[in-house]
Image (cartoon, rainbow over all chains, first blue to last red; front, side, top):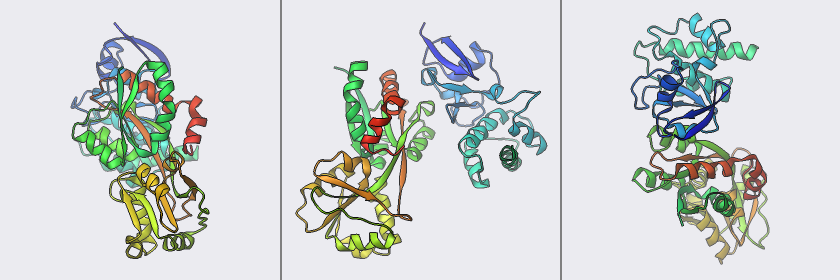
Length: 156
Length: 232
């Protein structure tokens, strides 16, 4: 079985698996990293978003081979219960989630945005989250939460 | 011998050409494919053209990833390219300090060589700048439009016009014999475009495509990218 090496949340891994398998399948199955959720399975809803390098990508249609030698960050690598990421604090403060199924993917899209653009406008936040679906309809609160997190991060 | 199929904006042609030998030594693969206006290259991929790797503007590549034609995780920045002015080798350079100077330079020339004004990054920008300067109509009869920047620059080099100038991506000017880079566009008219590489979802040789992306973006090739006209 071929081996694919990548860094997951800062930890170097060698994964023995078919390189054509989806990254989401490997994360949730073989590696037990269940933060990225299975939604549509077609790269359309964003529930499975992770960050590869500095871009948010849908893990469900990302082949394992394409992350070789790259940094993959999942929600598990963003923050912890003890030390949540500013985005996670802001989502709680703004009550920006209801059922929560989409939120791990949305947080990764937002985190990728803030890495590239620490002071986004409301429009830029909406564009960054455009490919993430939330069936509960919490989008407006999420936009506010991302802007709040950006302000907090800028203030240090 | 096996070949890696590429569809690329003309801006990256010089850089890819300079890496062909290294890529062949590393993988045993040749590089085949097409370089042209980014919009046309994207449409070729959409229509089913066989390609392992595409090098296009960042915005266009992001759209192709959304359309599931490019593997999003494979996308990597190659570098920024400026749209710039060119003159025939041996002609006096065109020095433009501001928008007024650019307007004068265009109106003083009898032929302006540019790539496709609807499908290429530089050509679309030239059309916008002419409009911005209020000389779209005046300049229309002197525009010489070609399918891509490399062709436009070759035609500029062979031109027998009295005072021709060209405008396209700096990388295409640098890689064309017979023309000389004559400076960037002035403030307010300038354009720097990020070019990115990505592997297609239908790639027959994804591993080799990944190796080419490694060469295109690697720290070891920084000097080579600079020589080809990339500014970062």
